[in-house]
Length: 361
Image 1 (cartoon, rainbow, N blue to C red):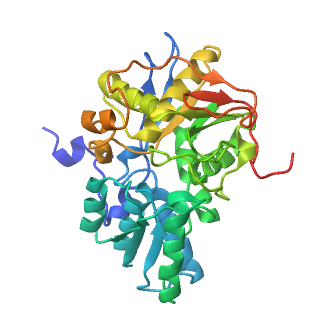
Image 2 (spheres, rainbow, N blue to C red):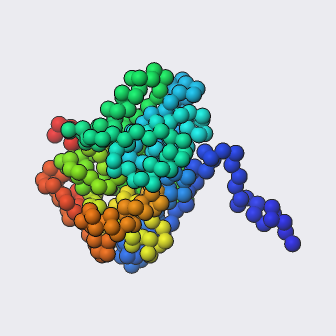
Image 3 (cartoon, helix red, strand yellow):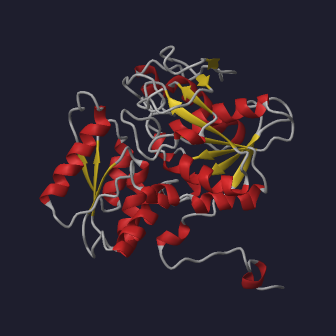
């Protein structure tokens, strides 16, 4: 009888540190009811990373800063986060022996606050939103005050740091190795890092690639007015410099109720799901796959898994308290608008006119 070592040769990986667990995530085929019969899309399951997709940029930004001397040994890492990057920075702090302070706001799920503390991070919560920049600007202002008080502290500044973009080159190359060819890439957009980084690398091999951005209603990124946002992990109340507007062929906005429906439908039909971004991306990618010709290869990035959302997306009491019917059916198609400035979207909508809202036109 073969030994266990022989039976599992090449399959059982061992890692000397937790950083080795990041990357080489699987892809899974998503079909009905998200797309029409015979069509579907491939989902890159970034929830298989220890903390989610942002483990990749967290490690990369820290490693690049250390190599340049911007982050000195033992210095504190300080950053604003809505959650997932915080998990990645907690991991990077452990791997590279740096204390980590994360600035968040009251919308952060309690389970995530508890896990970040368990991973050794100090979590500071701002109590009031900025009058124009909302919670994001309030968090960034608090980060600046911490940096001012500690001359050795370092902030990766995920919104502007080009290393946040280049960190996703391996993910793009993994997708190419897994799928061989990609016609359409569908990504959520928050800091702009993964949509810019993946598309930039893929277009070196696939110059005709279409890129579809997915945002949340109430986000300013693609020209909508800022409103209170329930969904975390995508969208913004500021204009992140890493968003590459020229990369997108169209953008979709998704409402919280629609994302919840998609997340729960993914769980019940595919046993693979995630949070707000995953639900929004699944809706858009399924529709794109249904509207393209047979054989079109659509790839979508699912940034995380469901674990941190058990008290929100998958909690009926939370949904009812926020005006969401958790039993609502899956929406079938978006509303189409000609220009982001034409109207304020409140439900799943799409637009093929994409530009920087502050650019002269």
